[in-house]
Length: 129
Image 1 (cartoon, rainbow, N blue to C red):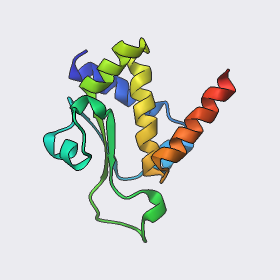
Image 2 (cartoon, rainbow, N blue to C red; image 1 turned 120 degrees about the horizontal axis):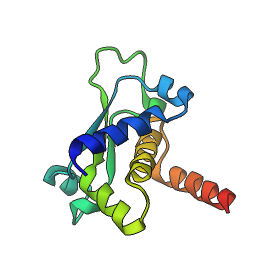
Image 3 (cartoon, rainbow, N blue to C red; image 1 turned 60 degrees about the vertical axis):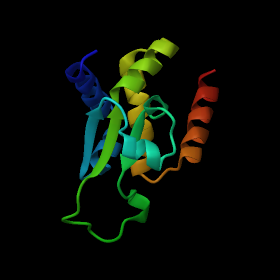
């Protein structure tokens, strides 16, 4: 899947978020990159760029002060090659994998930790059984 097709699926996933979340997101940019760069890998102590599917960079809503006007946008990076690899390994459609990663990174924007999101995802999976 080429970068343009992947970007289109990412935009569809963003547009599919519940309206209350989309409307609450301000000054956020979604960027698609092939994989994490060396600097990101080093800072996160990763051995392989395939160990990272997405990354939220910014200040979660829970720690922001005041209006924040004039600040640089928060950024959600989606890493195309690792997500495509995950899709192949799990047989999950690429669009679903993108949506899962995007939702996880949006969760960071709203201030959820990885542990909190894992708890939510586990509860959702349990409820679907």
